Image (tube, rainbow, N blue to C red; front, side, top):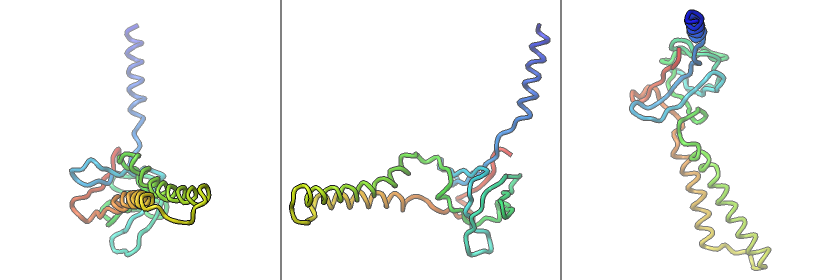
Length: 167
């Protein structure tokens, strides 16, 4: 009975060794907990050293320190800048939702007040100062959050790094 358990455990061990984790690329600022992840199938928008325009290509796989794309093969040291606006981040998802919803809420609030004031109450077309200020603050807060979010990472800056995990 003990031999069967031993063979079962050894069999599981060999099966587990055959499995491997999926590789992915991490881009981050050194010393920061914020990280951006790219996996196989994601799109990478990058500026290659020596070029002046950004390229957008789908990642097919990762090798040691190489990214294999659909139309290109890159080493990590050949990338100058990465556009991280479409990357998966460990940033709280509520912030991305808030920066998309706040401008719509501000415009909707202003439109609803104008509709209520002119159509329902029958008044002439006028803007209420409090409603206009509030809706303007909501729109500016939403666009301000979107503006403050990091969009590009310059890998030539020694503060930032990119590396491949799981290979």
